[in-house]
Image 1 (cartoon, rainbow, N blue to C red):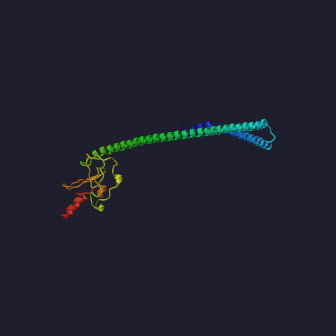
Image 2: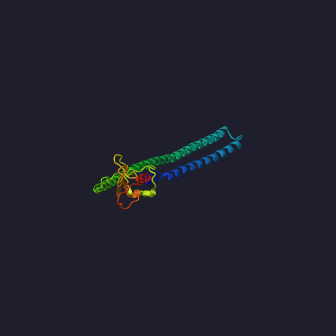
Image 3: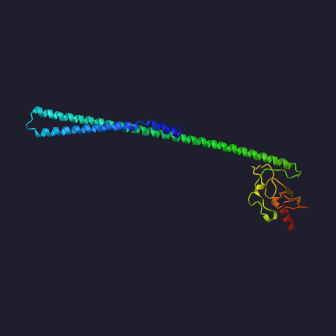
Length: 247
């Protein structure tokens, strides 16, 4: 139920409350006034009794005492009625307070339920979008793999990405250039497919083979070894070049 509906129903339920409270307060005020009038009569009768006690006959004294007793009885009845009206007024207000507390509890429960449903929906929607993105990337990778397989290079088949672990090589970057993250396909790692180059990633783009038959890596990305075009003659990778210089 919407917040507006809770508020509307509650306002409808308390629409007559002010009139009922006003009626009870008017009745209690009337009882107070009648009690005060009776107390005035009792005072007058008491003064009359004390002033004329010696001259009044027994029957007259008894009559005045009965009147005083009846007035006190009436005052007591008015007091009891006033207490009943006060209790009725309290219960009337308390009933609406309990109704308000119950509506607030239900409203909070509805809000929590809607938040849970919204969270579940967002989670499901997010998973669906991620799945679609993964499918698109996988399709894009398969397309690039196919085009790379047709370029005639025996060892340049496209592979999925395998990131280089930090510190795995200590070859100066000035010797072979920097690897740009934008050159790497953003795909999950497949441990069953081989990797190449100093960056330990799959083959992509243009690659060149080391002419050292004993080279442990063999194939390198142009960007990783600082090449933009295929060099003439024999070419050796940075590692093999350093080994040849030591010899």
